[in-house]
Image: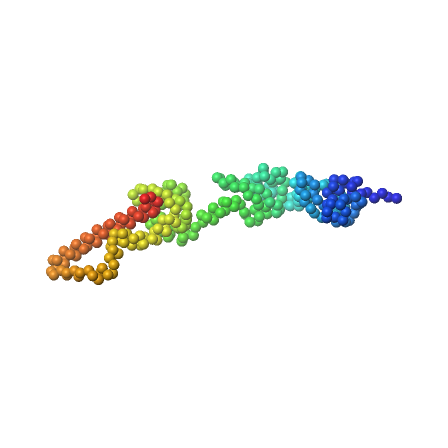
Length: 293
């Protein structure tokens, strides 16, 4: 009579992963090695405790304990899908991507041992001054030309519509752009509402640092500032409507000489008021632009 081999005798490590609660029997005793039953297993490697279903004869064929995820961790090169390597490795087909390959985080994989499939790997940005690390699969990098996500965000932020640039919208403010302290950045390259602090220089040589949006937002409020200045000086706002009605009427000039003298006095007074308003408005604007009191 032919002896039937049992799982506990031929493969004790695999039998030890027999799930004691989800199967009809608590142990693998009496289960043949060539059994076609699909049963539950529990991983015994590094307290993984992952539960999965598999046929008994399939587990016997592999003969290695542990779930599929643990097997890949133990020997990733053995279980890596190498069909893509038939078309050539990453290093041979796309050598320009090898310079951004993260050797430390991708170990034990190398550009010579991987294809151009959908498995994700780690990359280092090759742009000067950027040390960003990110994950992406080779297929997306090749098909869509994707690169460093941080550099992509910076490029999109710096892309400005010429009609919305500072130079196009506010040429008077753009004229005070500092010629040396902003590097290669020019009023053509920055949006008029950008919050990035940049350097400015007025016609008298004063230098200060402020955001573009602060300057353009305040520039739109100049008429409002002029009204505030007139109200502070008491020009046209100090007297109420009732006081205007009770004010005695002024006598009209009787001769041409009196009219000319009064007209010259009024023009001189208005000129002095305008200079005062201009000085106060300029002081307020400079304080708000520079952030000083």
